[in-house]
Image (cartoon, rainbow, N blue to C red; front, side):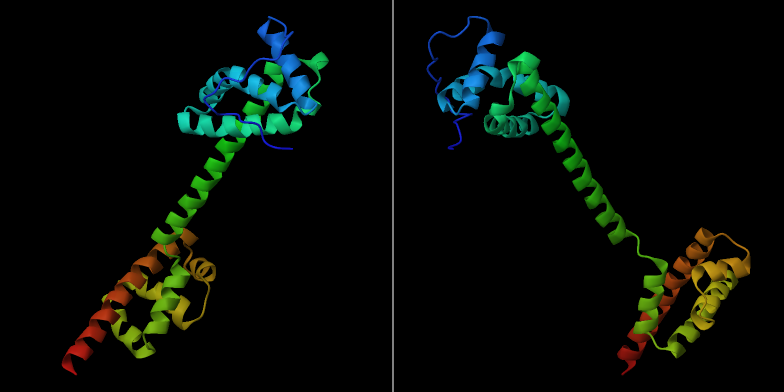
Length: 210
């Protein structure tokens, strides 16, 4: 079945013998459209679009989003018009439910996309301590790291020694020191930054002297 024109500028010609009441007329048009009458649905879409768009705009607070939703709503209404039962409610209520569901779906999709984007930003901005420490140890040999240890504070050096040299996990090291895990992570993070800076400086000095 071809899709009806739900957004064209032309005003479709009304079928004859329609009720004068808008609510009754829309119900008839929707029922007839459910039987496959594309022209009737185009008349219905032309008449109800402003009201449905206003409802979508009320929910979404964004004109572009409202226009997107209304296109989806009208297409869904055309495809499922055969399910409409006028004895169970007005056509505008039936269509309004589709608008509401589609609008909520869009809000959820937008929120999910933003949440994913936020997580990506967080992962990019905050590097995990374990990953950072592993990177330092891969890029620098043991002697370079040991040579940089004196530049750490006593607490930082103790934290690195437990995790790096003794092979403890961050949780195990925190338990050994009697400190919260976040505190242990903070000490390691600061220590890793200092180690990386020191190793990089030593590497640059070696290359410069070569």
